[in-house]
Length: 59
Image (cartoon, rainbow, N blue to C red; front, side):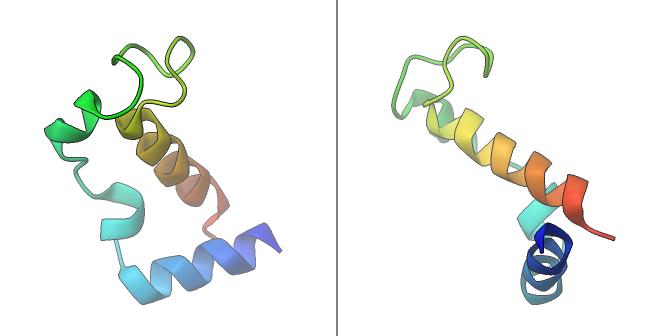
C-alpha cells in the first residue's frame, strides 16, 4: 500500500515531491529549528520527513 501511494505521488508531482529543495524560510516556522530528533514539529523537519518517507517507498 505504501509503495502504491508513494508511486502515485511521484507520478503526479515528479521529483519535486521527493527530491525538491525545501525553502529555507520553513526552518523558522513552528518549533525553533534543530535536528529532526530534537525539533520534530519544525516545518522544515516535517517536510524533510515526508520527502524521506516518499523516497523510501518509491519502487
